[in-house]
Length: 312
Image (tube, rainbow, N blue to C red; front, side, top):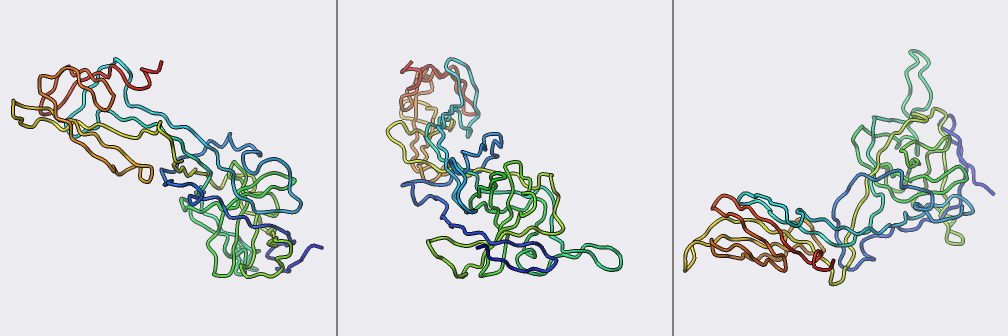
């Protein structure tokens, strides 16, 4: 039987038997670390990409499914000529695997849930009672996406609203960032009773004064994490470090920097590689580089061969 709560004119509430599942995180991936957040391709957010197939019995807050993506980038094309100044990265190579999921929502506009209008002046009245009082934010503010819900009318991200201790309050938005029609607020008391069969009951609320129906209110970003990779893992760059004197004349110096799986912006291994100023072909950790000209200020070069071109 549905559990009913009364909120007066704040909204219509009906009970939801749900199951709260923890979002899969980095703890499940040995050696993983946050890479970056990037804008999500919303067209890829098909229902199966959210929660798998099938509609659960009763509304459930479920974890988003992680997708896996191979990253392979390099800053050069074989045989093309480039010039880099001293202190600049002349070569960059990345070859690894990441998992990604939608993790953040950014508000596109100011919003605040209202509960009716004043008797005189017709100004909207901000809601003062839980849970609707928590439904507000400023344009540009970021919110965590804790999971997703599947309903007969579609799939929705559960976007966490800042709330008082003891409550968890979410707004439900589809892949376009549009709020669910009708009951777009879901919440629970953190210490609520009724955990029979492992489910956590939620209450969904359909406010009487809906916010921006039909218009996108949020945009989404993904969070990428390293996956522990095998021998094919690569993440390094080569910086031109200018000239320095050697025992047999000047050398130009290339600095090799390798990045670990736990930090994409901090090198965990660095080695300076000096070459005679007259050298024309050099081997940098398996990269065969033709040096057309080198001076204290810049280097002009071509990559003639790398591991990928060798396997072709």
